Image (cartoon, rainbow, N blue to C red; front, side, top):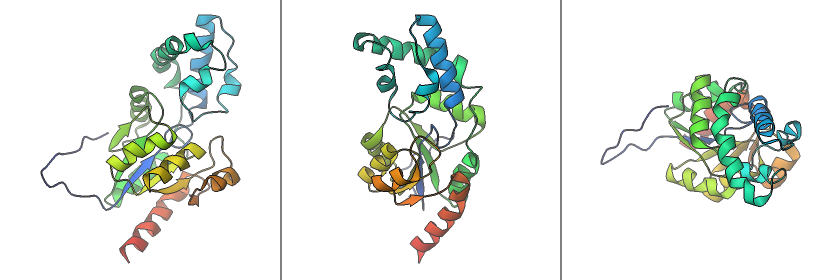
Amino acid sequence: MSSETTSTTPAVPLLTVGFDLDMTLIDSRPGIKAAYQALSAETGTFIDADQAVTRLGPPLDEELANWFPAAEIPAMADRYREIYPTHAIDPTPAMPGAREAIEAVQALGGRAIVVTAKHQPNAVLHLRHLGIEPDAVVGWLWAEAKAVALREYGAQVYVGDHVGDVRGARAAGAVSVTVPTGPCPEPELRAAGADVVLPDLTALPGWLTEYVRTREV
């Protein structure tokens, strides 16, 4: 992940594309399942990890609320994030086409950013482990709140797998490109207002090339 150079008159990239992380760039189900199982074993509290990984997307606190009293959630969230690198990084693979999707943006002279609800340091660990190199990573943002980072970076496109990602893109005035590789099927993504639904990220480079071409006409 490269750092951006600051200047008094920064060049505006032809293209800035934002990406969600979980179930968009990475298949985080194996790692998150392992982290929940470790938290369950440590606390003695039952967590149905198989069920939890069918609901990926929203913030961690929302899932923990299914298993812990409200007063315990902040401490459990902190502990989950602490043990996460030990259990979740190694088992988590990239989604098909993820690395190529990031590189396709950069090959077009653009900037690729990751905007995720995940704890930012853990998001960075995943990307480094998999050799995926976006230009920036912004964490702790969900749904409409993602628009804050998308507007800051001037993103014209946001790619995600969840209706929350669609809401974030629309709030930022960005084109909502989605892939039904997470918990939300294509009809649900379209009903939420997705502008584009691709089968998976392997189709993104071709779509991006056409998108840039039509913007230049």
